[in-house]
Amino acid sequence: MGIHESSVNYQNLIRDLAEMYPFDVAEVVFVELIANCLDAGATRISVDFDPRDRVLIVTDNGKGMDAAEFEQYHDFAAGLKTRGTGIGFAGVGAKVSFNIANRVVTETRSESFSDASDWYLQSAKKLIWEDIRPKHLQGMGTRVAVTFKPNAVIPYGRREDLVELLRRHYLALLDTEFLDLYERMGIYSSKLRFIVNGEVLEPGNIATDFALSEVRKFYPTKGSKRVGYGVVGLAASEYPLGPDYCGLLLCTRGKVIKPDLFNQFPGTLGPRIIGLVEVRAFVNFLTTAKTDFMRRSKPREFERLYGPIREEFKTWLGELGIQPAEIAGTDEGAKLERELKKILLDIPQLSDFFGFRTRKAVLEESDTGAISASIHEGIEVTFPVGEGSAGEGAGPVDVGDEPGEALVEDRDSGTKPAKPISRTAPRGPKIAFEERADLVDLAWVAGNNVCINTGHPSYAKARSDSRARTLHDLFAIASAIQRFLAGAENDDGWKFVDEMMAAWGKK
Image 1 (cartoon, rainbow, N blue to C red):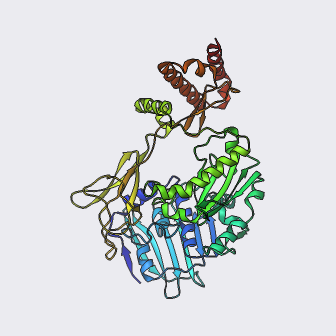
Image 2: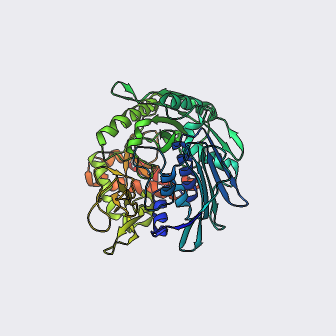
Image 3: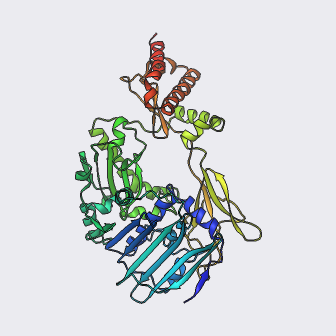
């Protein structure tokens, strides 16, 4: 038995690991622990949360860790996975938890190894892990118990909350058709089950569970070969998976990477759209946190997977009689976007609405070799694959040819952190156009975008003069955003503006 302490500044690292994710730390912990269970080949995954003791316990019957993996599991300067080998980021769930936890007890048992550790904060700046004897696991697998701090905000106090998180992040693994698909693909067993607070969560069927209508099943192809399976429909209620969560859920190996409407704006039906599509090859395009896709590394190869899904979705919308507007690539749209970007920083409400001023923590190496974090706007952090330097000097550098997720340059020693690569995220306003002569609205908000009504009488009157059209469009955008920010209860008052402009356009 021994006591060990990490040789790196864990506080900066766990903060910056958490910054890679688009959701809260407690949710990151949940998602990553489940992902590690799946990557271990588990067929039973138990999730238990005790709100009184504030302990989250995730147990699986997977292959467990060997001695080297268990040592690296505790090493903040080492990464166990490279891009494309799984849906999790081994060890990150436990490490990130120390943003809001004070203890993690881990037990693991594999064919050749068995061990356990008590990982805890000895002081505000000293994190150690102590060898202990495993006492809970009877067979192969891993058990992780996270004890959260008393002041930590935990969004899953009830069993229903845990189930909701599973559905948001692993819905395909709760559907019998998709489980059968994963078994045929050799990824998971169709007998995979989640046990939540002691009760088995039996898989169902997405069409039945969400009372879907207008259901469409499809098989995305790459060339003439099927590369996935999808189903989409209209749910009986809006946002059945939670606020602002709708569209076709893009999955790989059962993990929901992101919901997508493919730059389509299907109006009031949008919040009711829910579906799943599994494409195994998407795993090769995941960002470090595996919550989005890296399209720039191999854009043509990615488009060959993504494009057919987008076309299936557009075809389905067309069959519903929806003629959606796409984000404009026209000169008019590009000009408006440039004009808006000029004033974004001067109008906080505008920049916040369009999500332009995104701030991210970036790891930087000083001349002395120390790793620290600084805040940058419009930056998304990633790491290089495998060995070698990601760039010269400290601070953010441009994206590499093959950005991946190894955290170390020297895999043998596991002590020299790689320089992070950062890439500027594509932020800023997006303008769409749709001809809706049946609507009095000058423009409306769709997601973080604004759709201008080219069927409005005032647009028709102003379109012949480029300067007048630009002023009209900017006014329409402003009115749409202000109406959105004011809330639905104040919508009637803004109809006056639309109606007045319509009357002007008809004269």
